[in-house]
Amino acid sequence: MLQIEKIFEKVTPKNHSIDGYTNNKIRIKDNTFSIKSIYKIAEHLKWMKEGIKTCDTKILIDSDYIAGQAILTLMESIIYFVMNEWNFKVMYRFSIKDNVLGYQIFKNSILFKYNNKKISIEDYNTEYNQQITVDMDHFRKLCRNNEENRKGKFISITMDEVDTFLKLFEFDDDYRNELAEVIVEIVDNALNHSNGDCILNLNVLKNSYHRYKYVDVALVVIDDIFIGKEIMEYIYKENKSEYSEKNKIVLEAYEKHKKFFDETYNIHSFAMISAFQKYVTTRKMSYTGGTGLTTLIKALIEKSNHNFCYAISGDTNMIFIKEFLKLNEEGLIGFNEENNYKEMPPNKKVVSVNKYDMNINIYNLQFVLKENEYGRQ
Amino acid sequence: MGDNNIIELEFDKTISALAGNDYGYGHYKKQIENKFDYNKRNIIIFPEQVKKVAISFVQGMFRDILKKIGKSEIERYVTIKSSSEKLTEKIISYIKF
Image: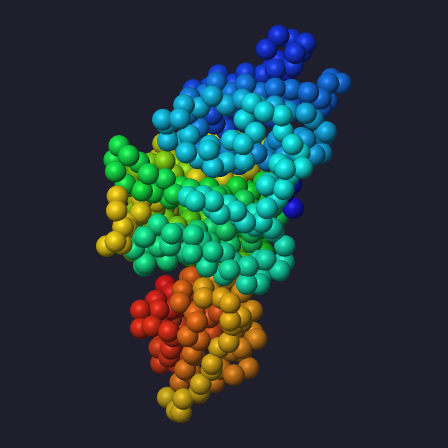
């Protein structure tokens, strides 16, 4: 289930009309179109749903930049939902400059086609529900969260598809295979630890200034099960006999970390960073597992060279800052200067409270690509 | 260790990648559980068509075996054969990860 309705559950309705609500237009002035902007739009749409009879609106987005593909996926999903479920007539107008990085991602999105135009619901729905879309430097897959996909060959097929897509760009074979693996590990993790469908987008982009290519990976799952929620349940559960012994490290760390809990660091964020520790798994009676997200950290260390990688889950923001990405000999990561998971809280630049909690789980990651000997920059 | 026990795995012919913890575990149940012999060296053969394997699949496939055999001992009981030496090494490193 896409569960887009869950986006609105924690949002308080609010009128953001430019002039009262006579024309019912809203304007986003944030310099970067981000989760904050999405939240404002959600507030307004919920206000329309609950407070007024009109169902027409126009959203004017004056932002110069886009925070990432995941944010556009959220916007696509909201538009899809309110048109289909609430029968709203929505128009939007982005005015992103065509010389900025985010523009390439915007151009590949469903939103681009209908920018400042009347939306054909039928066409929009067809595109939105398309199971897989491959278009030049863009790959999109809608991964339905059902038992067959979680347990069957779906993840394997997805790995093949991602690898085949990346083959188009003459990247080094091993590097490409590893990247496809990391991407599907996150998808596997997302499908197995939530109830929501997962929307995966890949964009192969070129940074002309620094002269390298990179893959922008965005994964969106809408669900109130945040990353680490099951770990939190494990902490509180009296009978822990059905869990892996290896999880005890979380309890050990929790005793130290709870002393650091304050308005910026809480049990949710602790549980989220714990999910990245090697062998920590909430899979019952399992002696293996808890390695998928460690693989992600390894890939971020080896293949990402800047700090535009982040995850937002429930009320926690997490930025994968390069200087704090180190795995120790036990496969633990502290996300702090000391690289000490067991005793020290993560650096405040890494973990913060997401004020715009909309039951969403997103990963937005960027991997610099190494080309094979035939590839040209 | 006694004789060899050969287990030839089969997968959907259209797949060249294997991923997913539960998918790996499912194939353990289907293709390995009843054939694995703890008194022999088990030669597990991945078909030629498989070129890529993700850690989640390997961890799922060896979940139950690793309950009985420690990671350090796995190579006494299990030999992996696959489409390339590189892939074989990768699978072993993922079992021992």
